Image (cartoon, rainbow, N blue to C red; front, top):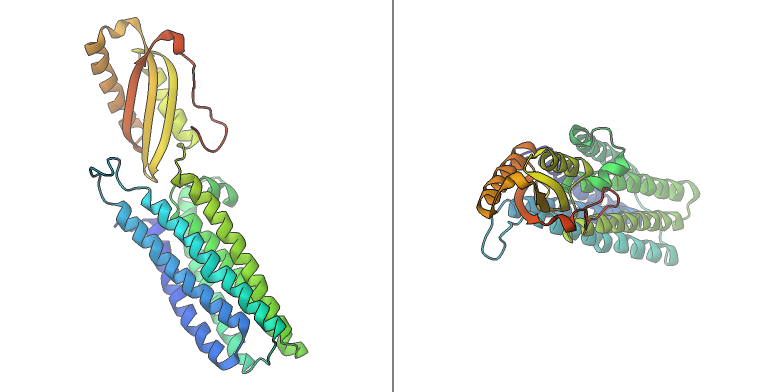
Length: 318
């Protein structure tokens, strides 16, 4: 498994969250803080999530088989979707339940310096993990905003880690606020409110992740830049007079299927000559656009030219 930016950031986040989870549970044993317990469960969920992302990358690297002739690239999206499920149930709902219990059945916060100290250490470790994710993301983000990067990225690992680490840092702020308010006022309800805030945050992030990964699981077209490059190759081919239909779909983050119906120029000759000409076009497509892994070009009649052409607008193309 190649250690590209996604792998480096995932391993860094896994190591950070494993250490943070242990420290939070130790602090919970000393303090009885519900926000601390919620944060501990959150860190365990995050650690498991990074494991899922690494497992998805490993399984997606398998080659094509009889049952899966286009390979297993989409497994990365499936395991990223599982991350959203774990975050929703293992982090968000648990935090909401724990916060509700603390608000309705408050009990005093004990040994609060433990809670404050561990949370501050966790902030430092999460910040380092987020910094790694941001650094690796900037290598591929180009001039896109963070919202655009998360929405448009075809590889799931970095967007998932950015959202997770950002949510983790905000969750730590909520936990610190809840513990501090409880210490200052002597009212344990604030600790429970901090846990509820953490739960709402994690549920929101889980929903965003689920929506984004679902789009890739069901089949998403290549980016506008890749589609334009494909079109340029086809338009430049002297044997192709027109593009009747163009469809693209990601089989994985680094694999794109291209299916097109093209109107051949009269100089293309008969069926056998046309097949040889299109074979050369397929080769040029792969050379120009390395993401293209499978190409299917079909001759079409002039009467269907322009029918069903793929548009550049919209997120998902049919």
